[in-house]
Image 1 (cartoon, rainbow, N blue to C red):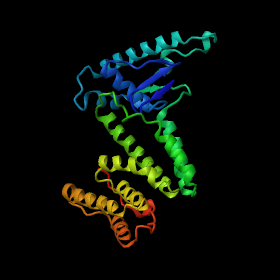
Image 2 (cartoon, rainbow, N blue to C red):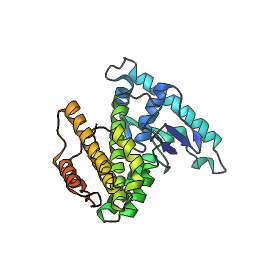
Image 3 (spheres, helix red, strand yellow):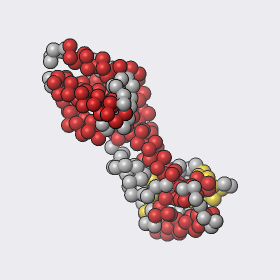
Image 4 (cartoon, rainbow, N blue to C red):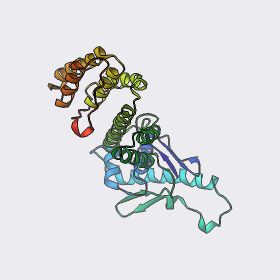
Length: 278
């Protein structure tokens, strides 16, 4: 089974889609797919579907959705049959398993874009720690390429999926921050300017991204614009959050103010930064 949730939901068994079009079964499959090979409690699925106000028939209705998913899986398994012995073939109940207290989607060793993202991002973080900035940039760029849009972009999520979507977005932003830092470390400041222009506009109170934008501008000989980025961020933080920029960002601003246009300003490490995400 191949699972994609970092964008639109796509679940395929043997290359054949088992993703339903109906909203409620789609929610069930999305939560099961995200936690593939793990038991998802019935209580979590009911909370996802009915957001704290389940009908009396909630368990029976959930079972109906599971049966609908198994029907799609069974069709995919039949279409994907090969010459393997019948005893070796999986059934729909082997793929979508009922267990005490919940259900488990058995991927059968297939792919998951979330797992691959976590694997590549983890390797990228370790490369950063080891000082291998080109390797880190490559690995983190590969991890981020797995995203085709917001997680579960075409699923109408409830409490559980909304929470998971926010969690996944935080992991993406963390990888993005580290990839940009790695690119700055290897002197790709000019190549980053267009991307950072968009990111600073999208994440208007994210201090790390604005600090990286300031560094990239300054190193490209655009000191005045770098200082303008700081002033816009400060105005936004004060107006929307009632906060001043962090001490680390204020130090960066002073460094740029005191430096000549030709003088490089060193990037601070993540441990020296205070991140606020808006």
